Structure formats: C-alpha cells, structure tokens
Image (cartoon, rainbow, N blue to C red):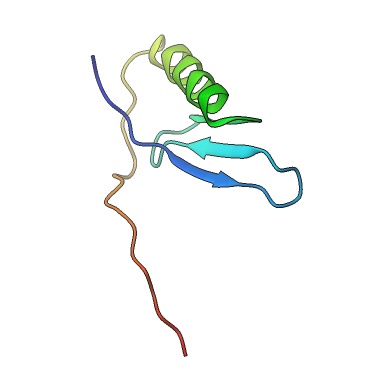
Length: 69
C-alpha cells in the first residue's frame, strides 16, 4: 500500500472541495464533502495506476505562512 499526499482547497464560487496530488498528472477531482473527495481521489489514483506507476514530477513538501504588512 502506498500513500499519496493531496492538496485540498475549497472553491469560493461552487463551494466544492477540490483535491489534487502534486506532481501526479491527472490526479485531481472535486466533491461536495471531504469524505467524498477522499473516495474520488482514491478512485482516480487507482485508475491512473492501472497504466503503471507514474513518474512523480514534484514532491509535496509542506506549507508556509507568509506575513505581508
């Protein structure tokens, strides 16, 4: 079993959660709830892995808070 880190945002226009896996082409989806988003991301990743393990183009490192005056 392999773990993937997804970035999750909430669209202010639609109210939907949007998730994607950094560096994993095509690994993105949206949903009304976080649980649904997780299921959708799992399904998308599983489908993409059917073609073999992708070359990850970037690695999620973390987040930073930037203060601006």
